[in-house]
Length: 226
Length: 135
Image 1 (cartoon, chains in turn brown, orange):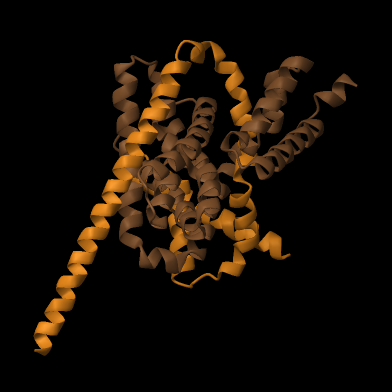
Image 2 (cartoon, chains in turn yellow, purple):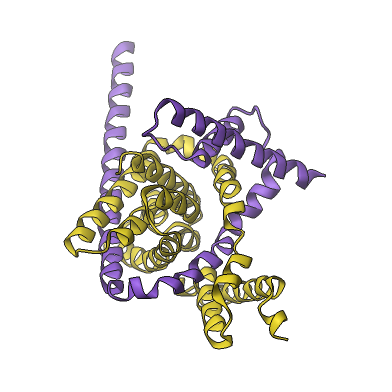
């Protein structure tokens, strides 16, 4: 029994189940904290701790990340091309917003991180937090961060951003769906895009585009970080 | 066969990107350009220029990007291994996240408003010029 409970197949099955549960929970509540990634992560953590599974082997079994990371990043071209007309019409605001989003996030993390005297390894893991997870991992490993921390921080950022940004949008009475979409896409990636889609279809499409461009901008800026 | 073909095309662009990145690193050893980003750029150009049709990558590409979060669950879970490192700074990390989101949001909003304003002004000028020419 123990063998089954710590096997790869069971691990993947459980991950799928938790992920589906998270998706269902989000659909019911529309609350960003119930993002499938966060829900599945917390449930899996609970399982590992309660069932006392040998974590190292369990995770290496599960993690096909390095196999998927490349194809995932390359595939980001697909959602972009589908929004080609929208991008052509708004190319300048999208490019400017994405670069500003990436650069302000990196700057804020760098300045605050040094001010708070945070551990260097952690700081490097947080720097790419504004970009979509696969690109964030790529950049983090390149500048000397820790992959697991980067993923955790990106998830937290996405979830927190998807809560804060709609509040700011309301407070500032922002109506332009392009600004709403850019605001959510540059700060809270996929979770923000789901939120943007609920607010306005154009905002959702722009957000989906912005998260890819913010990732690319982060990777470009990271070339100059050392 | 369709899906296999799409996986092949996506992997092809990924490998092409990695090869080009290797070439760049050979010429500029200090410039670490990620091959994945180059692969993304190449696929974007191929699709935008219609050299490659969307149907050749759509199903697999949409599946991967649409369910992206799933692939990162193991990495997110493995943050358990770094609890000691994180324990002392989790509050600082959360503060950094919240402040930087608010800062970024304001700057993004301002920059887009500025861009739209300048764009509108420029278009106005072009329109005026044209009507002047006609007059």
